[in-house]
Figure 1: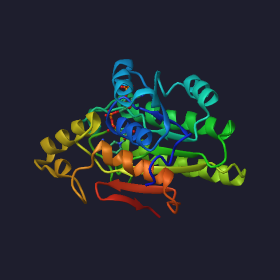
Figure 2: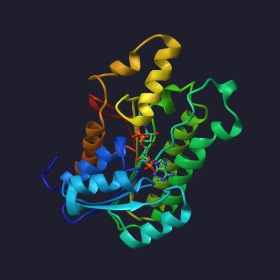
Figure 3: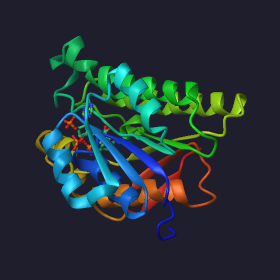
Figure 4: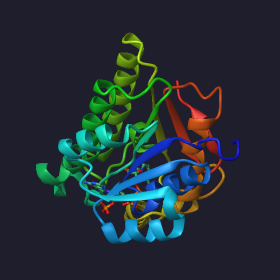
Length: 249
Ligand SMILES: NC(=O)c1ccc[n+]([C@@H]2O[C@H](COP(=O)([O-])OP(=O)(O)OC[C@H]3O[C@@H](n4cnc5c(N)ncnc54)[C@H](OP(=O)(O)O)[C@@H]3O)[C@@H](O)[C@H]2O)c1
């Protein structure tokens, strides 16, 4: 990646207070972007501001609220929009979910991608803008202890494809791309599931990671920043492991 390749660019990251979102915000800031970080925990966002300085603007808000999406797209018109916010579903077998717990990731993760992608198309963001959404490897492989999570993440990949198609049909020049990270025990969400699958299967596969070892928030940040800055990364979806990005057909 070029040093300061994103100088002069405004990037907005949802779920920037911890985990992958924090790693993405730090990497984008490192590449020179002015980063706006959205999450509900203003204290954690304040800590990130202290770390990144004036290149980071904290915005405590609920990213799944359509009014928040509309206001912040109008206010910041980001050249890079990373839709990363996500809920941690209850780690239980399917029969122990209620419809409400099962559908949690639809109400947060999918709803937020829907609202923000729609606002990005309607604004529209400037030609050359990039919208990155966080799907999950679970969309490909399933996740039997997390209710509707895998389906919600598959819907995010489809929503991103549909938005890419609408952008192309209208000649908007906005790129939409989804990333599908492997399970990582290095985040609050991932730690819950690494522990749940280890308890259920008696194995530490999630803790050992996939190709290249355990995926870290820093690696996800570098992968997303690379997608935005490197030429030739033109697929609609990528698997993300510690070994890097793998384009998906
Ligand atoms: N870790 C993994 O293994 C893994 C694998 C594949 C995909 N993913 C996806 O990657 C994304 C980040 O996950 P993570 O592992 O980094 O999880 P995490 O550590 O639990 O972080 C989730 C982030 O989302 C924010 N968030 C949740 N609900 C929100 C809302 N309504 N409005 C605004 N912000 C909200 C949280 O901040 P507040 O609580 O402060 O609002 C936090 O910053 C998620 O979409 C997740 O599904 C994770």
